[in-house]
Length: 257
Image (tube, rainbow, N blue to C red; front, top):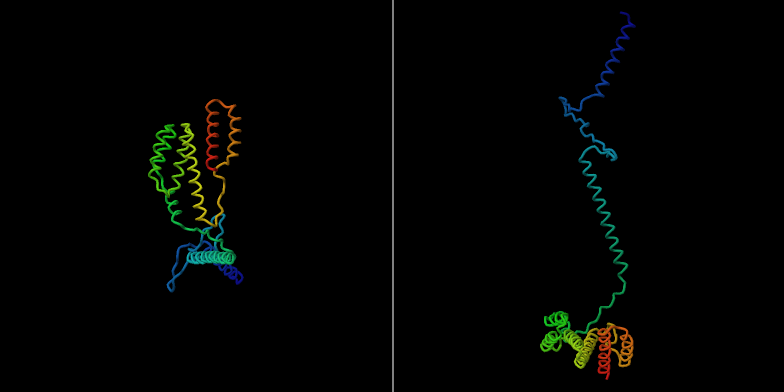
C-alpha cells in the first residue's frame, strides 16, 4: 500500500474516533458513574425544571435556595421593624410638646354619689305602673306609683322625678286638675334639684340651661293658640288639647309665683 493511502486511512480513523466521542458526550446517560479512584458526582441531578411564566433561579443546590430565602425574609422583616420604629419615634416626637387637654374636674360629694347609684337601678313598681298606664288602667297605675313614692329614699331624685311625672299624666287623663298640677310642680322642683346637684358636682362643665317650664305669659299665649286650633279638630282630640293647655297654664302660675 502506498504511503498516501496509509495517511488517508489514519486520518479517517482519527475522524471516526472523534465523531464517536462527540456523540457519546451528547447522549451520555444521567446514571451516576463511579471510578475506581474517586467518587463521581453527576451534577446533572441538580437540574431544576423551569415552570412557564416563572423565572428560574440561577442557584443549583436546594440548600442554597433555603439560605437565600431565609436571608431575604430576615432582610424584609428588619426593614419593616426599622420603618415601624422610625414612624413611632417620629409620632412621639411630634406630639411630645403638644398641650394635654385638662381633665374634667369633678367635685365629689355624697349626694351626687347616691344620685348616680340610684339612677343605675330599676324599680319594678314604676315598670308595673307604666304597664297599667298603657292599658289605660289609671287607678292601678296611681296605686303602684304611690307605693313606690312611699318607699323611695329621699336622695333618690332620679326615680322621684319619674314618679311625679307619671302621676301627673295619670291625673291628666282622669281630668283631675289639682292633682295634675301638684305632681307636675313636684316634678319640676325635683328636676331643678338634680340640675343644681350636677352643676355643683361639675363646676367646670357648661350645662344645658334650657327652661324647665313656661312663664305664665307664654302659657297663656299657648292656650289661646291651642283654643283657636282645637276648634277645627274633632271632639275628644280638641278637648284633650284644650285641657292640656289649661292645666299647664295653672302649673306655670304655681311654679312662677
